[in-house]
Structure formats: structure tokens, C-alpha cells
Image (cartoon, rainbow over all chains, first blue to last red; front, side, top):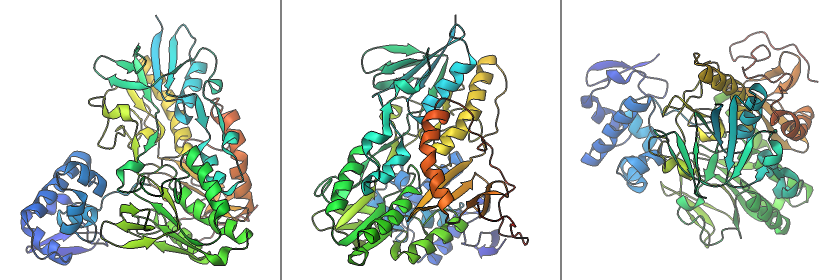
Length: 105
Length: 422
């Protein structure tokens, strides 16, 4: 399993850079993770989504889809795409240090 | 006093459960009531063939009540809500049903109105879905008139019923236009929110290359934000566009509406959270879920419902007897994938094992993840199995709830499967 270093701490990630163990994540790592996704500044709205991702993961064991984010996070889908242009569900999951959202089949 | 079982939904899951449990219990031990809003049971896999004129809607529809055994009470009524504390179901007609055990089998609902513009200009004129009988029949007429241009097949978001059906539609459209001699005048495009043709890597690679071989363009990671019927384009949230002359859409899906009106029962999309292995709801121990209505990470497909039915019959029995539940449902799914020109693939998988090549159910059998005429014949034959064996609750030989492993080739196996194709 690959490792990466954020905020001076080694963490375990998968091949695509998603955290394997969300307990290794700290808020201090988020800016570096965001920069890796091409997001230069984390605004309050970004943080709102990041914290929502963490609480959803804690409650359900998987990150929410964009559709559920749009329905329940308080941030509309259009704005989610402005905050996380390459796909809110995946990008926000990566910055929030949770595993890649489990796709439906 | 007999115990009271109420089943919401008289489709594949509800019918299987009612019939299997009716065989198990005498009428003096258990009353069984099935509620559905209409008396029309659609063999949904047949909808795929309607747009190409191979099947007419009338051929794939039968009365729901006729699929149920004797001593099963069929109520044609809309569910208003479930009160999970009082253990009652209120019906739109005014009646209230009391239950000791409730089985939720109300499937998934299409939500085309949730996508901006989808049901505005062009809906049912140049924009269709084959996921409803009306849509499939209207699409058949539109395809018959179509003499060239851009056909776009668009999966708006997951989960959807039968996740391979949109791919099958694309393959069959390629064959249909080829047989009509106008394939060179048609641009076919498959637009999906996934990062490949399918969710699971081995099958996704096979299916993606099959799209390429048939000249079907694949557009991935496209999250449809709006549809412009007048302008003939779909637009993603990240502002990409795909133009169309004819759009075949697979709209958003959600659970049944009453789930949202029943506090504590469902999730944000009105699906009902349940244990992945026992199918017991997270809401209450005496509520179970089968088929598309659940939030399980399994395909929303008839085969899944069928396999769940075996486990759930046993679990309802154990629950009524006060025994520990059987946690053996493994996510098993089994799908034929029509690829056009009289051939089909077969895939077989579960929660843990992705669709792999090999043979089903064992080393000698139907080829997996490989195009063959035998698989196509299997798909055609299945409709008869559905009405005459699966719904009545008979065991279907060779197709069991637990996924078979002996015929599958794992990516790291070095000994290739020696069996030859039938």
C-alpha cells in the first residue's frame, strides 16, 4: 500500500491517493490535499463540505454521492462543482481524508 | 390467532416472498397481504427489446394478482405511509393494515423531473426513456422514423435499475441501425457519470472495448446537470456539452414516495437501509427489505431480488420463530448482457468478487464475460423461467443464492480455464 506525507505525517493511501484510514487525517492536512487537487484556497464553504463528508462517513461508512451532497449538505450541486470542479464527491472525499465513495453497481 | 405478514409491492420481490412463504405456512398460521397500486406486473427485462420492435409491451405484462398463490390477499391501493412504531400501514383508500412482519418490495421509482429541462421541450418527442412501458413504446416509434443523426444514451446518475441495460441498449441500437442499412448515418454516443463503461474493472475494460469495436463513442465522468430539448444538448455540472438529435435517458431513481412520508424508514433517496447479509431493515427488526427498494450496494436487478428471496424467506421464518437470522446473502447478481446480432455476455458477481471471465455455474457451463449465442438464447429463455418458476417460488436448477466460484478465472490465476465453450 503506498504512503504519502501530509503536514509532516506519513499516511496510507490507495493507488488513487484516497486515504485508507480516515483516522490518520487531521484538518492541518486539508490545504495540502486540496492543492494536489488544484484547489488553492479552502474557503468556509469548502470546509462546510469537508466537515459534512467526515460526518457522513462516520455515520454511514461511505462518503455521499454528489446527489446526496446536493440534497443534504446545504450546498447546492452547482456550487459544489464551483468548489470542487473535478467532481465534488471524489475531490471532497480526498481532501476530507475518507476512502473513495463506494460506487453503486 | 395467525400472525400477519404485509408485503408492500407486488413485483418480482413481493410475489416471490408471498408465494414462498404461503407454501411454508398454513393460512391458520400466517395471513399474507400484498399491496400494490396497480394490477400490472411488467417483466422489466423485456422493456429493453420494445424500442427495436422485437417485443410489444402487451407481451411482457400480466396481472399481478394472477401471479399470487391462493390464500394471498391482494389489495390494489396506494400506500400512504408506514407507522413503524404502531406497526401499521395506512392506505390511500382509507384502510389501515396491522402487521407483525412487514416486507418492503416497492422497488425504485423514476424521477425525470429532478433533472432540469429533462421533461420540458422534446420530452417523449426526441427525448425518451425505455425504463417505462410508455417510454419504450414511444421510443420504438421514434426509432422507426429515425433516418440518421446523433443518438445519445445518457445515464444521469446511479443507482439505476439493471445497470447494464443502457449498455445493452447501445449495442442493440448499433445492430438495429446496421440491419436497417443506415449505421453510417448514425452517431452513437454513450454518456455515463462513471469513469468507464461499468463499475467493476475487468468487466468495464471488456465492455469499453466492445463499445469501441462497435463505433460507439464513450463519454465518461459526465454528471448531467441539465437537458436542453430545444437546442438538442445535454450539459454537465462542469459545463461540458453533448449534442443529440435523439436522447435516450436513464433518469434519476429513488425509492417509493410513501417511504419519504414514513418517519424513520428510508434514506435521502427514499431507499430503505437494510443489513447487507440478512436484509433486515435498520429501522425495525420486524421490517425486511427485498429488491430495488433497499439501499444495499448490490445491483438493482431481478437476479439479485431472486437470490435475496431465498435468504429472506428463511429470515422471515426465523424471525417469526424467534430464532437468530441467517446472514448468508452475499450480494450475488447474475446478468445476461445483450450485445446485438443474436449474441450476449453473461456476468456473475457478488459483494466481494467482481465479474470475471470463466464459466457458469462451474468449469463447464455458459461462458462468462464472453460473447456467445448460447448466452443470448439463455436470456430469451429466461422470460418463461421468470413467470413459471421464479415468481411461483420454485427453485431454479443450477442457479442458487450463493455465488459459485469454481468456474471463475481470477486475474492472478496462471492456469487458464480448460473448458471449451458450449
